[in-house]
Amino acid sequence: MRISAIVIAGALLLPAGAYAQSVNDAQIASIVVTANQVDIDAGKVAAVTSKNAEVKKFADLMVTDHTGVNQQAVALVTRLKVTPQDNETSQSLKAGGEKNVAALKALKGAAFDKAYVDHEVAYHQAVLDAVDKTLIPNAKNEELKALLVQVRPAFVTHLEHAKHVQASLKKTD
Image 1 (cartoon, rainbow, N blue to C red):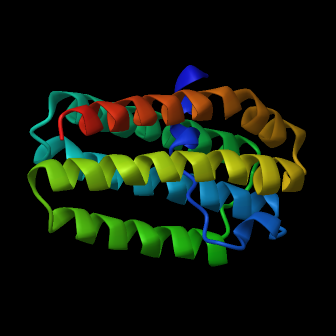
Image 2 (image 1 turned 90 degrees about the horizontal axis):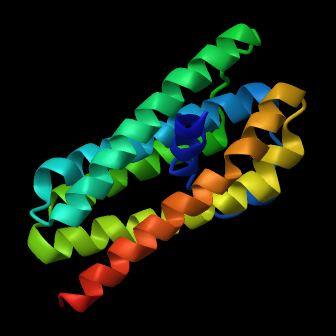
């Protein structure tokens, strides 16, 4: 369950205004899977592009954790017989993730590391906001809601790790 908590954590950078949005369980499932994939994609780029050992280690962790969470999320929605439903938030997440990856691919060296890690800090803060303000309040299935509550501390862990890497990059400037 630790991996589930960690992977969902890095996954949910919701667009402005999405926090007050009302979403159903099928839409929450789509948001979670999409958000995880966004962080996997950025992590893969960082793992091969960065020359900084700490950034590479963090990126590898994001790929591993978020891949595991997506596997568990798919298993949960399959067991619950919930088909993820594409929605405005999941579409926005996908578009934002593609834009971020494109921007990252144009960068190298310290500029790349800074852009990747700064995005990860913002992304993980947004995860906490989304979980607290949108996902948990709107989840109707008790098992889905319990999973979101249970994994919330991992969101904090990912955010703190990203902030640690961010601080270490500032020391090397």
